[in-house]
Image 1 (tube, rainbow, N blue to C red):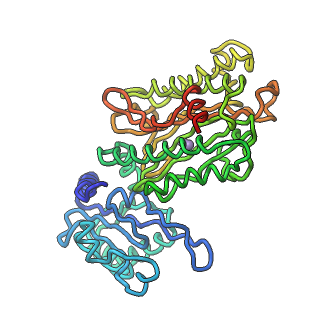
Image 2 (cartoon, rainbow, N blue to C red; image 1 turned 90 degrees about the horizontal axis):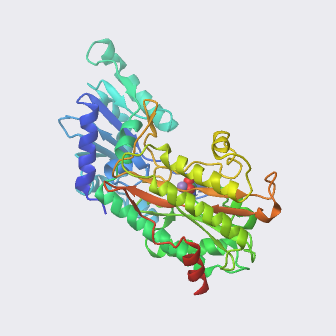
Image 3 (cartoon, rainbow, N blue to C red; image 1 turned 180 degrees about the vertical axis):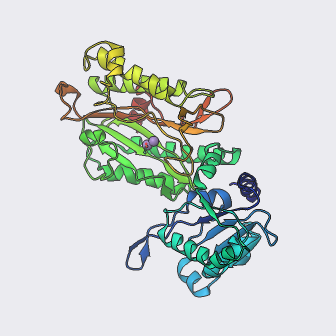
Amino acid sequence: MIKMTEYAKRRSQLMQKIGPTGIVILPSSPIAQRNGDYDYPYRQQSDLYYLTGFNEAESVAVFAPKRAEGEFVLFNRPKDREREIWDGIRAGQAGACETYGADQAFPISDLANKLPELLEGRTEIHYALGLDKAFDKALMSALNKLRGKIRNGQQTPLCFKDITDTIHEMRLIKSIGEIELMRQAAQISAQAHVRAMQHCKPGVNEYQLEAEIMYEFNRHGARFPAYTSIVGGGANSCILHYINNDQPIVAGDLVLIDAGAEFHNYAADITRTFPANGIFSAEQRAIYELVLEAQLAGIKAAHTGAEWPAMQDAIVKVITQGLIDLGILKGNLNDLIETQAYFPFYMHKSGHWLGLDVHDVGRYKINGKWRTLQPGMVLTVEPGIYISADTPNVDKRWHNIGIRIEDDILITTEGHEVLSHHVPKSIEDIENLMAKS
Ligand code: GLY
Ligand code: MN
Ligand code: MN
């Protein structure tokens, strides 16, 4: 768990960055109705969560540096016995102050009245315009209420700044508390992958393996996946974001599972590929070894001081050489890399930042230059080779082999730590695990 003092420290760092006359306004994610009286499970907006730890819907966090009545103002749902009987306990305004450290808290219904007063005397509104139309409108009407004061000189004209980049750069470097949660998310996800391998046999359905994954997530307190699990057998292993997960697993096919738990709002993102009947065929083995070699090369390239493309460069080199060695590509290594001849087989990037969001925030380039890795960043390394049956000019013995191997990597001062190391990934370890099941 992250301590409330850590959230307070983040808010104070953010307020330092925006200066004494700025104001930050962060609305919560809107509630998404599923149908009738039911909503989708609520997921807090990650920036708001990062700065408050507050997980309730219908809230707005305001940070107003040097404000006499307090810098952290939270608008949230009031206590309401009837609603709490139906939907669950709310923090209310007292809880907002006592538990979450707000200096002042008001019912969310007071927002329209209070906003103009909060904006008064400020010169810059740090707010992400355009993300939430309903809130944009509320903010515009608050601004209109201030116009009279601008005209008679009591208020400086306000300008908007998008706060997201500033918060996202803070989110990119994970604290010790965040790393601990991510380690747990990865550990739970690793156990889920092991369980799916143990329960796989020809004839089970993809959704049954998804169920084993969800069982393991849920029983460790990770109620939701960080993204919809991908469980694809055979031809489906070649569909990058396959989520139908409704086909029977066939003997002789591969199974690709890309699944990660969300634990205390932090994501894991792990992929493993294994044979349905527990033993790789010669062709599957050849491609698997190649993807694994590429992944290990990508992970090796992920260390403090490395530039972001270092992982992709290492992966592309191994994959291209391997495809030449297998006779799938023909030509000179450098020429084939130059012309991206690997692209029909490996059509995505080496990975992405990982954190509160599975494709986490933070820039990849700064002033047009690739960023270098630093301790505290967490990223995925996830090469793959996908040979669908309609890939041109490939012998059919390679068809329907889709293999991705993905791990979660913490950059450290010494190099890196593989947070998701608990799932087997060598051929030998996978076959041994499946033989014992
Ligand atoms: N699970 C989505 C991805 O690997 O990026
Ligand atoms: Mn993934
Ligand atoms: Mn990923």
